[in-house]
Length: 370
Ligand SMILES: *[C@@H]1O[C@H](CO)[C@@H](O)[C@H](O)[C@H]1NC(C)=O
Ligand SMILES: *[C@@H]1O[C@H](CO)[C@@H](O)[C@H](O)[C@H]1NC(C)=O
Ligand SMILES: *[C@@H]1O[C@H](CO)[C@@H](O)[C@H](O)[C@H]1NC(C)=O
Ligand SMILES: *[C@@H]1O[C@H](CO)[C@@H](O)[C@H](O)[C@H]1NC(C)=O
Ligand SMILES: *[C@@H]1O[C@H](CO)[C@@H](O)[C@H](O)[C@H]1NC(C)=O
Image (tube, rainbow, N blue to C red):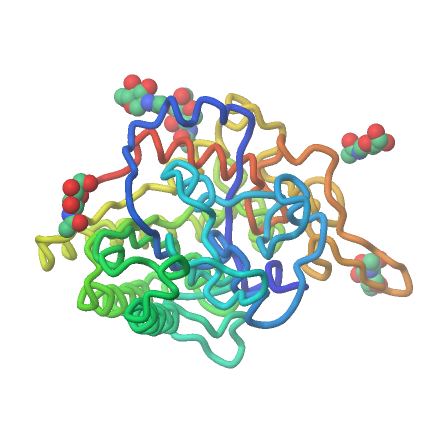
């Protein structure tokens, strides 16, 4: 299904082979009884596919799960690697009901295409941040109800996991990157305040329900996504020295500066909470700029797509799908070795890139505890 690659939806990630040293290099000591995740396709472990009723097509999932697994990636996402580091199982998507889902160690509300701002009729995902928060509140209320009967202890989080658990956020990319199709940079910059107000209102509801540990990812270099470069980067004057489109990166930077200030404000409001900010932008920019140093061969061209160099991206046909255009059948196929590509499908990062990003997060060098 095309959800992941439609022009309005943007999300990203990826990694390599250094991962054996992940555990050894961790300087972040992660220990939480459960994780509650909110976001977009960067951390969607099957939510949008379950909710809308479609199968993500191969070669998505080819690498680790050997089946698409509902993720827009050849394998694992950053959140999967973080769960590994916490020695917790991968998160089940909230709406995925098939196959005995287990929520004892947390739940994933992230859905591909989601925005922080409320969805509208044209949105890919109706599950914007506010909805994800309401889903969580319902999940919490029903879990507490079930726990009274004792029969379901093994399926839902323990009572104190709601307070002691980690609340992870990776959302905002679609609010910014999606907006470039209809708005100017100035309009987008002006919308950041409203985006963060909406974010704040959701986080406040979580805090009021007992959440105390917040882990907030900032947004990546959106102007480096092949989808964005293919659409907005045809004129070389729009590109920066990395070959990325400047204005989406400017929007991402402006958002991130305000997000950091927001984290500080949050801590001020809630002195009894832990607020951790993680600088994904710096990790991903460094990866794209210095890809060969990290074992990659392609920083911008997508692994799974159609059209060949320089981007191997065609907005008309999503990874794994076949279409007839002008009477010719075309298929967006996977590359031979996704582990040397940063971009999986033009919008999302490869497993190799995700693994690299996660390993950088786990060094602790990119996080700030407010
Ligand atoms: C904040 O983090 C510290 C260190 O991980 C932990 O000991 C403490 O319990 C956390 N605070 C809350 C309110 O969960
Ligand atoms: C690429 O690596 C060089 C050398 O380590 C570093 O100075 C530079 O900041 C990196 N580029 C980015 C965008 O992080
Ligand atoms: C189909 O035709 C249009 C107009 O002639 C052309 O721009 C486009 O590239 C063609 N598509 C393919 C897949 O060849
Ligand atoms: C992928 O591998 C096949 C078979 O080894 C080879 O023919 C093809 O040229 C390779 N494609 C690329 C893009 O390297
Ligand atoms: C983290 O940063 C420190 C200080 O800059 C550096 O010595 C160390 O190598 C970094 N750790 C990793 C794993 O990159």
